[in-house]
Image 1 (cartoon, rainbow, N blue to C red):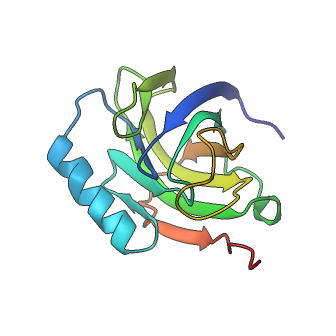
Image 2: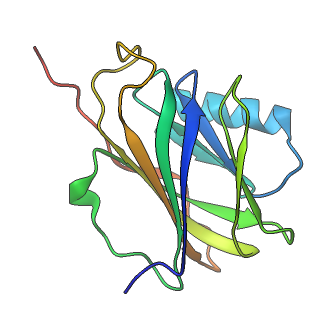
Length: 164
């Protein structure tokens, strides 16, 4: 079983958060509310149109991001990842998924319109906050598959910073 559509992107992360947006109309107030909810809660928040994810790293200006679209639920490989989240996301009829991080230019990729369950996973973290570089090497994957049910945003796995 494999993804029916894959986009490999290099994106920029700043301020330790990124947004996956299913429509091209930016709702700044909604994003601010979701960022507050994600940073004060489980590290993820969603209103169905956008998903906000909090990264352990403050920034990564050359972050690898893979977007996969599946016909059915993607296989569970959480043991291979350090951070993991689930939520719901609706992609509007124009089929554009936007990746946005504060102060950075957005990236887009085409995804068939519809309502999706979303799993976001990341690995390769070196520290919480400032990673010591603007290119710390962490990378992320977003998996989407059709879902008629709303998936409540939740953290599935949290990275634990090594103690030195």
